[in-house]
Image (cartoon, rainbow, N blue to C red; front, side, top):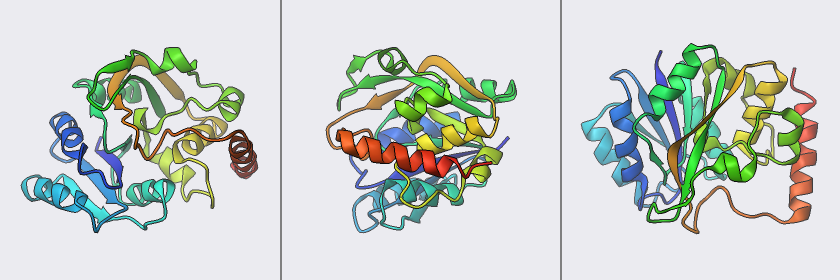
Length: 231
């Protein structure tokens, strides 16, 4: 099966080379990394183009400049693989991430969510297990109220992708939507309780920031109303 890595970038030049170096050795010759750059006038483009010149599996496209959700949608629309891995620009994949996830896919999983070791900007581990700290599970109601789905720890089949695109307008977060939609549609969602990335939290991440109480309420109302249309 062909693998596509959907990587959404925004001013990612500081860490993105390290991320690519952790991914490429795990991919086959027919796989691909789609980098959608939401700030193409910055330095990320030149970093990615250097990789693309040496490795045709790396493909650079310009984002729409409309934020992280639409940037991931842009990357996903360019993916041609049978299995899609979501990817942030500043993490590091463990050497067995792809093989372990693909084992779960081969055993019938449609969407796989794996654990992560949370680190600081220098990759010093601050939380050995995201799952343990946040009580991650695959229960629909639990995750509608308290989301534990993290896109950088997620992979899914092409059919899941097709059934969850296009994203609804003003969607709070792409990974939350994909996972909840997959559960509602009856896809097999598997939790792999092993940290397979170093999830770098360095203070200027595009995703994973804190939000206010009222914003959280509005997001959940929006998500609930959007999910009512999924069938």
